[in-house]
Each structure stands twice: as C-alpha cells, then as structure tokens.
Length: 211
Length: 186
Image (cartoon, rainbow over all chains, first blue to last red; front, top):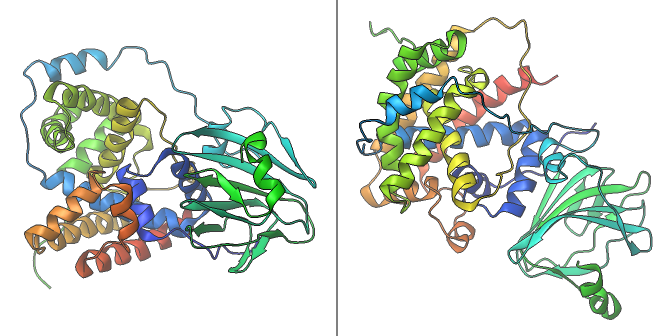
C-alpha cells in the first residue's frame, strides 16, 4: 500500500473536532482519519486544545442533586449503541453510514455506479464505483467537495489519488477524475450541494440519478 | 535542571482509577472538577441551563461507561472529555449520530509508559501557557472555533488557525502524537 499523500487541511480538522462541520463532510473526515495516522495525530492535537479551553472555561455551578442522580444511574444497565468497525475496504464511519449493510449500487451508465449513503438539503455523501480507465463525468460542484479513495486510484488535473488520499475541491475546481487502469476505483464523495455535470445530457439526467 | 518534579495530574489519576477499578470516589472527583466547566462551556453555545445540565449528565455518564477507551498515552483527560462533550452535544441537539473514526486497537500486552503519559501532560501544560499568552480577541476567536460556533463561511475563510503560538504548539503535539501513533498501528 502506498503512503497517503493527500490530507485534510488543518482548518477542516479543527472544525471537525469542534463539531461545526456539516454531517456529510464529517463522514468523509472521520473516514479519512480512520485510515490516516498523520491526520489522526493532528485531530488529537486539536482535541487537546479543546481540552485546554475546557479546563480554563468559566465554571457554572450545577444543580445540587445532579451528582446524586448521576451516581444512582451508574449501575443501570445501558443499552449499548451499535459499534460499527471497519469491514473490508470500508472504514467504520462508512459502515456506520451503511448501518452495517452492504452498499446498494445504482448504475449511472458507462459502468459507473453510485450508492447514496445519506442526503438532505445540506448535501450528500455517497459511494462511487468507477471502472478502471473510466472518467467520472466532467463536473463542477456548487460548494466544497471531498473525495476519499477506498479502493484503486484516480487521477485528475491536480494529481493522483490512491487509497486513503482525500481530495478537497472548492467550487472553482473544474476537474475530470479518471480511474487509473486496473481495479475499479471506489470513492466516498461528500458535497454540500448536488453535483452539476457540464455535459448537456448528464445534467438533464441529474434529477433522475440524484447526483 | 529545576527541582520541579512533574507528576501525573490529579485528573489523570482519577480517570485511571475509574477506568481500572470503577472507583466511584475518583468519579466524584472528576465530576466535581469537570461538571461545572462542562456546564459553562456548553452554555456558551447558547444552551439553556437545564439543557446544558442534561448534556453534562450524558457526558459524565459516557465518561463512566466508556472509561475503558481512555488512553493517557494519547490524550489528557480534558481532551478526551472535550471530544465526548462535542459528540454528545451534537447527538443530542441535532439528533444525529456524529461520525467518529475507527478506534485504534491497543497492543493488549502493552505496559503503561509513564514518560509518554507525562509528555502528554506536559504538552497540555504548554498549550495552556500558549493560550494564556493570547490577546483577548485572539483568545475569543479560538474559543469560538473550538466551541463549534464558527459558521460555514467563517470556517472556509480560515486558513487554519491564525495564531503562531497555537499553531506551533499544535505542530509539536502533532509530531509527538504522530510518532506515538505509528507505534500503535498494526
């Protein structure tokens, strides 16, 4: 496995640590951190700073009975939340977004497939499956787009992205990612807006495919 | 060399007693230390006092239940609790499950490494010093950022945290953590 060379910018990691990153991006950031020692260390450093601020923060007295209430609850049986861990190429946060199920792939034509993990008015996060040598249709996007490679690799105008690499593109980047020859490339893609395709027909098809 | 001997902080000692012995007295000490800070911290995000207390309860309960996950080689107690607080806050307020990274598996046979634990604590001390050297408006910006109060626009306007001292502290912490984490992987 080649080393991860494309990382998450510090400001985005800080926003993730603080919880101010929108859900779809948070799935991508948590997934990359699951794969990347470098970004995990940086994230934990941000958490240390958060902790230092918590230590220094002005205290507000809690209600008198709170501690007793809490102590009484310590032994109460807890229903454990499901813990999703890495499965095959999918890191825990992706498995969690799939609720432990297999991805449901839908064809976008030309062998390209997608599986939408979640979407709402704030954006979407999906898995993309691109056969080797195939391009993701030329597209721009309205806002920030994060693409994390989970299998294979792709290249575009900005470089080559292998397993664990994350491409963070803003609205100015018009790029054409092409899956490198070989294994199909599987990516996790998070956007804050529907992708718009530049070619005429795919754009008409967008509502149909929800891409 | 000065005579000051660096010792493992009270908070870490308490947390380890909770983790390893389910020690209720230690948990009470942690509660007394962190609950009022957590309440103040959470209320700054605009939560009402009752709602903040609900989150504090939840955070402290999570501290008890997930104590086994606390690793003093990687995080001081305040950083660990900060992260739990941000997660629980978001889960409760936004009613969504916040995506969290896979946990790192610890080498089961690993002995505690006191020097590493101390290094983490020292780093936290240095971060605090760096924080206290900030001008008030810088300090406020940092607090806003880590309380999750920056808007989307403000985040994208930031090219990382603006402040030299903080950045270099984070970088140092990063170096150390990176080294440590490499040892943990595989």
